[in-house]
Image: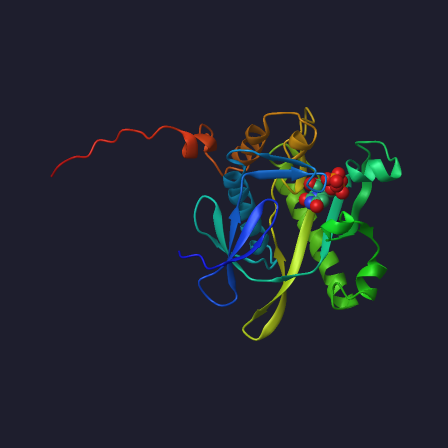
Length: 262
Ligand code: UDP
């Protein structure tokens, strides 16, 4: 599929114009960044894995009635998506306290929360994505109305319920994650769609038994074996085959093939 012009380049993805009006091509890069771009690296194979994992989760969410921007996966690194106008808010759902919650408020790392905690941050790198209140979102109209915000909040909790179950079934604890939503015009009607990605880059995922981190904290905290951890998530979700090694798909030597002559 032909890509149009580059619309936007983010830290881990590039968005190109899609083949039809209202569509875009979302390309997953291998770049990893943390701490508002202070730490940067390339993790070979990460983009391929995130493309597959995010596709899997979005398709599953679609089946439980959550509307998403995903139309279909195109290839190893790209998805055809609906072009949405993203609300400048990151919706963060937490089940266990860790990361910025422990740093900002001194809550002990690993504290299990009595119910999911929904936080908002203003999507703005210049200010380091600051934590904001619901009132900021409404006052500055970052989401059009209270009704829209309540609807998105209910989607966040529904998505959390579903994903907690999905991951628990494969021995993974869903600690926290980030969601982005936007609006698209579909057949003349404005629809709120889940957008961006859901992957080990945007979730914290711990092995239920060992609490081993299977997410971007391996990069943030220099724990090593990043791509192996992402691969483990994909394997457990049944996205890639037990023996497959996604990095060898791209970087392995070409195999000899026998071509039978008729
Ligand atoms: N997160 C994200 N993008 C961001 C900020 C957070 O995907 O710009 C995810 C992060 O991976 C984690 C959750 O949201 O799963 C909560 O992140 P936290 O607020 O603890 O921020 P961090 O400690 O990563 O700065």
